[in-house]
Each structure stands twice: as structure tokens, then as C-alpha cells.
Length: 204
Image (tube, rainbow, N blue to C red):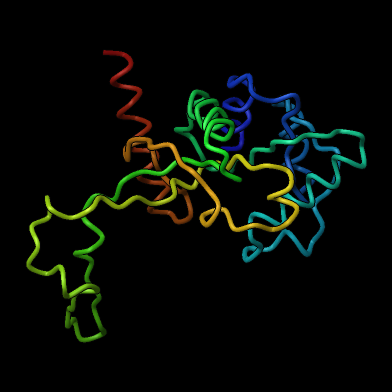
């Protein structure tokens, strides 16, 4: 899985160095074999399932600066991104320059209007989150987007100051069929099905 991220980063032509932050020796060796650098070991305090993204990247920036590697713009690419395109990385990098935002990242639209979202209790009783929109035509509602969970470009100062990505960002839009945030076995299964479908399409 990490190979997709490394390949996309290298192919984008946006980076002087592609670095993998990990606390796992096997992952580090694999990353090196795929063309990435692993100049430091991520500390245990930043390696559990609850660690936010921004502190991990801030640590990576500081570790690289101790190596003498300085950068004003740093991109965090998640490892589970089999449908990431190098052109997306490049487009978001250009947006970082043109928008003046502290971060840029990809988003995709929700399949259904978020204003018509429902909540459901243990007995199956269903209620709208936003009752005021329950009778509004879906085509009259403002489209909503969610983070694609693929990568984040950010300015060095934003990462090191711990600024919130979503409160300080601009975004590019990618199609929903290229967004699979792999966190569960169901996500993995969906990614496999999509990968097969795209492989068949490319043959045709």
C-alpha cells in the first residue's frame, strides 16, 4: 500500500525528497527499497492510533532540519491511497501558491445532501439532523464536501504552529470514485473492487 503513495510522490515531480515517517523497521526498509528516505525513527508518543496528523509532520520537519534539510512547503501523504494521482498533488501545490492558504488538500462531494442527513437510535427511530431542510428539494440545497483523506500540503510555519488543517485550508475537488479512505475491512474490499474495475476499463 505504501508503494502507491511513494510512487505518486516521486512521479509528481513536486519534491526534493520523499521521506517516510515510521517507527517500524520493516516499513522503513520497504520504503527505502521503493525510493524513499527514512532518516529518523518516529517516537512512540507519535505512533499510536490516536495521534493527530499535524504533530507527526511537525516532528518530521524538525527531524529533517536537524539533517540540514530545509523546506518552506511540506506535503503529508497518507499511505493508504491506491487511487492517488500525481497530478492531484501538483494541482494542490499550485493552489497553495495561488490561494495564500496555509494548507491545501483534496475533497470530494457527498453522495447525498448533508442537510438531509438522518440520525437513528437503538430502536430504529429516525430523525433529521436538520429538520428545517426536511421539506427542501435536494437540488436546492448547497453541495457539501468531505476531506478525501489522501494528502495535505502545508506551509512550514503552519505545521510547526499546529494550525488546524480544515480551518486554514483551500481545496481541490476530485471525483468520489477515486476516494477510498482505507480504515476498515469494508474499505479494503471496496478498494479491491474498484481497482479491478479500473484495470478492466484500462484493458478495454
